[in-house]
Amino acid sequence: MPHTLAGVAIAETDRNYGGRSVAARKAERRSLFLNAALSVFADKGYAGSSVADICASASLARRQFYDEFGSREDLLLALYDQIQLDARIAMVDALDAEPSVNLRDKAATAMAAFVESVGSDPRRAHVAFIDVVGVSPRVEKHRVDQRSVWATFFESIIKGVVGDDYEPPGGYRWASTAFIGALTALVHQWSTTEPRPTVSVLVDLMTVLLNALIDDAPLRAGE
Image 1 (cartoon, rainbow, N blue to C red):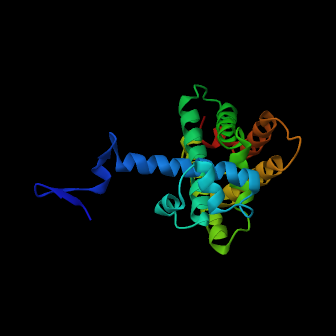
Image 2: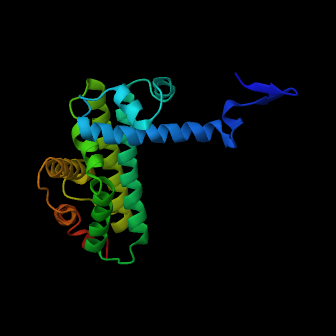
Image 3: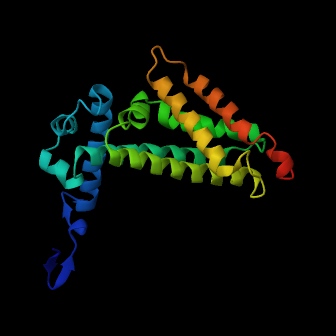
C-alpha cells in the first residue's frame, strides 16, 4: 500500500534509499539474478542447478529471489526471453546502420548481428538452445510461441528490405519456419561441439540460408 506524507500518496517505486529509488534497486536485483542464472545454468545446466546456487552466485537472499521470480522456471523463461529480445534489437540496429542497399550485404549484416548477440558468449547460446529444451510443457509451449514471434519478426525484416510485394518460396509462414528451424539446429549443434567452429562460420552458413529466401527478391521488388 502506498505510504502517505502530508496526505500525499507516495508509491513504493518512488521512495529513495541511499539516493536510489525502489524501482532502480529492484531492476538491479533482477539484473543480478539474470546474470547469475546465465553463469549457473551454463556451468551446471538448468536441471542440475537450484535457487540456492543462483542466490549464491548473485550474492542475494532467497527472499529477494522470490520477490522477483515465482520459481526457477520463471527465471529461466525471463532469461530466455531477454536473450531473444537482445538478438532482435541487435539485428534491427545493425540493419539500420548498414549503408549498403545490396540484399546479400544486408543478409550478412543481419546474421552477423544475430550470431554476435547470441553466440559471442557461449553461455547465452547454451541457455537459448539447450537449457530450455524439454524442461516442462509450459516451457515447450513458450518456445513454440517464441518461434511465432521470430517468424513475424523475420517477415517484417524482409519486407523492410525488399518491400511488401515480395513473398519468399512457400510464403512467409513456411519460409520462416524452415529458416528458424535451420538456424536453431545450427546454433544448437555449434553450442554442443568442441572444438566449435568460429563464429564467422555460423554467419556464412546463415547468410547462405537467408539469401536462399530472398534470392529473386530484387526482381519481385522491382529493383
